Image 1 (cartoon, one colour):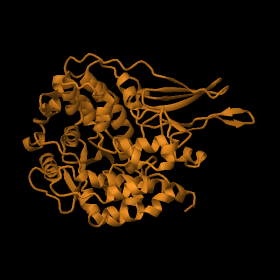
Image 2 (image 1 turned 180 degrees about the vertical axis):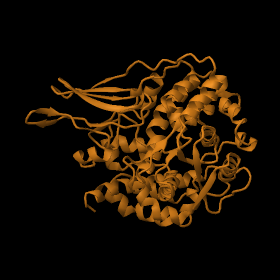
Image 3 (image 1 turned 45 degrees about the vertical axis):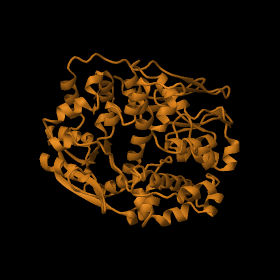
Image 4 (image 1 turned 30 degrees about the vertical axis):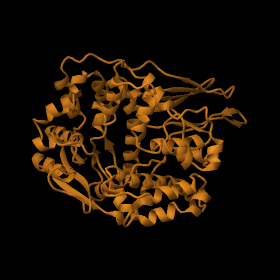
Length: 482
């Protein structure tokens, strides 16, 4: 295993700059698409910060980038939200020659999958090794992944304080995230602290949360992360924070099950890339009406929406479809969305994070595990649950998967309504030039009832559109512009 697999770096050579992003690296690497002429010759501008390098292109929005954001909730590499700026995808190398403007991409050989004689023992040993600290704060969501990280840290002798975010007015009884988090902390004998969020908290902290992002991300889970880290910084700023992020990528996310079914019962028009894109539940079918007319006219139709998904499938080190989906999940949702969103929130409060499931040796172990230890029929995370029975209460281990559901639809009907009024009114949208004001108004006026099982997505979509508008506004405020 090479340390370079978790790094992004560039180096100068006599004929140009070489940019490399490791196969498991969540650290972004950006560059201008054209060299800058200088007295000593051409110079390629490279940065780990999208905000910093975006300054050199005057933060001009990319039509393809806006489209991608609307469909993914982030902009997958090699594209970015800015015209004239590209990003290096995980596992790729880019050569920027001084002599001309032709950029050369290359894909190194995929990581080899090592043999695995004793997966149960190896898995627990590696997980425990990544949780050894003198003191730590652990984010307990109520899910199995974070509970197992807490159990591993506890067995390793790490002293911990657990932190959990819950939403005002939501159920905290048996079966809820909060009940499971409390049970886990009590079972392990660790201190448990909770923060309670409501729509007015969302209204108050929305701007600071979005402004803390180096790239636009549309997930409302950013808010509880921001306020959890704010609480940790106030109480225990010296602690490293442990998270359970990455468990879904290691064993398989929710997107896998419907895709597996569609692979078994193939339809003539079915495409894997489009099926995977649909799992994001964003605006994949509506973006042509949602993007502004000006940007829509500038859109380069040769740049395929799903090309990052296609490339991730091609680069998979395994021919097995289930492992291919896990690999695509790692390359896109994991390294380009999940890790960047939580690390941006931690950076805003000067905190260090550790994600044991995203460590390189854990990822390679996940690739090497046989499928029956990851997904068996309707049962997911098989090996994790086998081990968890020795460390956690039965109710936590076998609890139904829920995820952190931020009640955005309820919030936008109550205290968060001024947010949509401010960011998504017609005058503001016309001024920013990113979105079609008429389509946005239609989305705002949709009738969402309590019986609609997907009602939460309405609020998530409004949050996402507000986040895009707010993020671009924060760029100009940094420069002292209105």
